[in-house]
Amino acid sequence: MLRPDQGTAALAAWLMVVDTALALAAPWPLQLVVDYGLGAHRRPAWLSWLPAGQPVLLAALASALGLVMLGGAALAGYQVTYLTGVLTERAGLRLRVGVFTHLLHVRPAEVARYPQGELASRVSADASRVADAVGTVFESLVPDAALLTGMAIITALIDWRLTLAVACLLPIYAVTARRRNRLLRPAQRLARERSGQLAALTTEQLARLPLVQVFDQAAAEAAGQAAAAGAAAEAAVAALDASARFRPVNDIVPGLGLATALMLGTVEVTSGRLSVGQLLVFVAYLSSLMGPVRSLSGLAAVIARGAASRQRIAELLSLPPLQPAARRPGPRAIRPGPIAPPVLIENVSYAHRQGEPVLDRFTALLPGGQLSCLMGPSGAGKSTLLALLLRLADPQSGRILIGGRDIASLPLAELRALVTLVPQDPWLHSGTIAANIAYGRPRAARSLVAQAAERAGVAAFAASTERGLDTEVGEGGGLLSVGQRRRVAIARALLRDAPVLLLDEPVAGLDAATEAAVIGGLLDSGRGRTMLLVTHSEQHAKLARQVIRIGRQAAAVPVSAWAAAPC
Image (tube, rainbow, N blue to C red):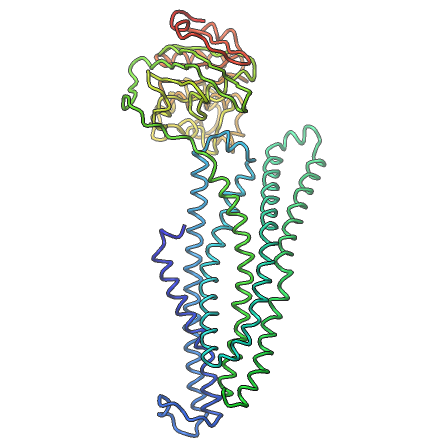
């Protein structure tokens, strides 16, 4: 996620080094004043230019040096914070877009296993947590670890005995951190799961508000929301407790180190191995340890949250995408002519669950440029067959050929240009009627959009609105009736102008007059196309070249039978 911003990351890292160096140098002006201004130590050669017996001048020089270092550290710290924030936001953007893009190419059945609210939570909240963890590690772990390392080296050079005595307290930190992480990660994982469940429930409840009112279930739904919110809050508090319960140890250990340094440092000063100024510098370093230690302690919680979110995102990224077309010999592309190519479904078997086939060695031939009807009871596999024709799923055995070429060998983009669908449940997005019609062909001229609207019966109801085809449809098409949404979906498919058109009960929910007009428009605009109409209407079946009746478990039918005469 950070690789595209290597230059920014390198600049931030360099500024971290500058900030760390200035932080390490900050206590040394104190020694100048104590040892060479107030004490009797001989001044080093580089201070010989100062008049003797003027401790105030030395104090002024030390103060000026301290202010310069403080200002430099503040400026470097600001730049580090800003650049790290930029890196975090860009990394989060790439991660969110990457996860969302992956989901767009995953088999719909795999995505459907997750509630929409849960998916939204993972794509947004979990991606942000992972990016924040990356940014926090970059901003805190590197400089704080460098600062602690630098302090350890400098204090060892000042007095290695004192440094070794204080270092004996480090195992307490290690044991504490290990126990905290062991408790924190599962707690954070549970908190993220409960948060995702709450988001999924909220999305589902808001989507069924009219149903809640009709059946007077407001109290029950509110109780369900309260229970889910309570469970999410309980998990969040448990994760907070897992992190906070070790805070006292992290605060007490530096105090023990400071007490040890004061006691043993006094011994070192009285023995002449350490000056008072050096002891003060040593103690100043120990006092400043609280910042990095607390920062690193808080970092463990951030990393644990990020790890839990990373696992949830990794689960989505592991979902199998639609397989790209296999490289098989054959024509480079199918070029539709005046008559659309035929479609052959040959010995196709498919099962959603092992041992329960929906289609079993099913065979059918859809004549090129003709209308075929697919009829059968619910659950017989009609929608599954449409999904296989669109390669939203692949058959477990058998093959499907368009114009003599196996669709498994076609690039998905080419297949999408050949086959389009009018779904049973029309999918509309927020925007205008015209924008929804042009969704599959965004660069289509306005005149073509109007033609498709006219043929699908959209123009009839759009004309009664103030803005016509520029009328907003609302989220999911909620401002239109079910019948109006169906007509918009039909117009969208007609504008796509694919040679193979799949119609999944496209006129369900329309009145008789509109139904007849839409079917007539489909037949008229579909001349020369290979069309497959899923319907329960015997009246519609009479319009077809052939009728394919599919049972609860579709069995094989000889191709010759379809080629010889309608079934």
